[in-house]
Image (cartoon, rainbow, N blue to C red; front, side, top):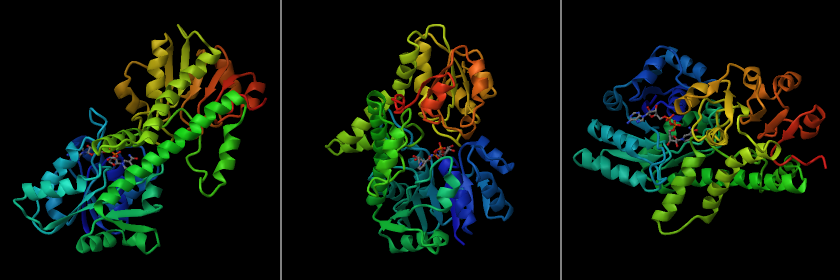
Amino acid sequence: MKKICVVGTGYVGLVTAAGLADFGNSVIGADIDASKIEILKNGGIPIYEPGLSEVVERNVRAGRLTFTTDIDTAIRKSKVIFSAVGTPPGEGGEADLRAVWKVASSFAKNLNSYKVFINKSTVPVGTGQKTKTLILQESGNNDNFDVVSNPEFLREGSAVGDFLNPDRVVVGTRSKKAQEIMRDVYHALIIRNVPYVETNIKSAEMIKYASNAFLAVKITFINEIANLCDIVGADVNEVAKAMGMDGRISPKFLHAGPGFGGSCFPKDTMALMEIFKQNGIRTRVVEAAVEANEIQKRGVVDKLRSVMPDLEGKIIAILGLAFKPNTDDTRFSPSKVVIPLLQELGARVQVYDPVASDDFRRDFPGLEYKDNVYEAVRGADALILMTEWNEFRSLDLKRVKSLLRSPVFIDTRNIYDPCDMREKGFTFVCTGRSNCDE
Ligand SMILES: NC(=O)c1ccc[n+]([C@@H]2O[C@H](COP(=O)([O-])OP(=O)(O)OC[C@H]3O[C@@H](n4cnc5c(N)ncnc54)[C@H](O)[C@@H]3O)[C@@H](O)[C@H]2O)c1
């Protein structure tokens, strides 16, 4: 049983802490946000993540998982320290590593025995080396530690399953001692034959950015194909399905939509572009994907204007504020681009999301937040479906139509069938299937 401290109890840190405790380790989750720790200590969960509360509860009850704001003591008591703090975009798009340096500083000050510092946050190549240097400087050259890069690949909305059943675990270190400790930490996965990849620190750091950038490019590619499908009368779902049957392509991440958002792809693509620049070269592929993605998000408003050119004074219902279903995370959500554009064009917006309204309200306090779909749609001139929540998949379409002032339905996620919707009397626009009945 390893004594582990996970610093940062956000989407990644809390899932990591609970997951590692579930593997039988003794884990302290530490965070500077006292309100989060208070909620956790009282048996609550500060974020919406399906299945997480059960794992947290189970491990708290078993005495394997505790929470604290006392980061120094938590580090002193532990041998294995995961840093899972945020690395948001800085002014120039580069990853802001201030929180990581703070954790490394606390680690240096509390290096009372051999410890491993594990970077779970997404950090630029070279951060592991800088972390080592900083810890040495701040600990008076105490070298009784190792630094490991162990990037996380979980997806919000299915984070628990992803952590407990990952496609692979990547562990970057050349230290034999640290390698052994990491194999022990992940023993429960290794014995289940989960692919376990050992690399050097820099490769592990690079794997994370390369993976996210690749997925962002893949989504953007199918979005552009969808835009062309709309013009030529092809059906992007049919195209993607057959493309995905090619083992070299795979069917995942081929769902056309309003552009990627979330806490990872936008910031990681920007950070990767910056890393390329700092190293004297460019990534034209990722740059193009980022630019195309911005255009894709704004294109949602063009879709609406293709059937409702003048938005002055119109009421638009937005269904979905989270960047994807099953999360309350609205960071870089496409709705955050679409809503201000609608407002600039004179529209009034009324919105509904099953769980993400509180998170969204922090940036958009003045919107009309509704309690359910039908309240959001009532009296609206058009509705835009932005997030494919399950509850939006089986709407009472007769009721929706009767509540709308005009039956304009923009389905950015391709949940509904265009022919069927037109038969039902909707003026229906979707993504890459708009003219597929031709
Ligand atoms: N969210 C995801 O889906 C996901 C997936 C893979 C990787 N990542 C990466 O994991 C990292 C964390 O992401 P997240 O989404 O969990 O972020 P988050 O914002 O949800 O959580 C970060 C947590 O760190 C805490 N924190 C900040 N500074 C701290 C400090 N000095 N000491 C202690 N706690 C501190 C914050 O209070 C917060 O609770 C990022 O680098 C992100 O890119 C995220």
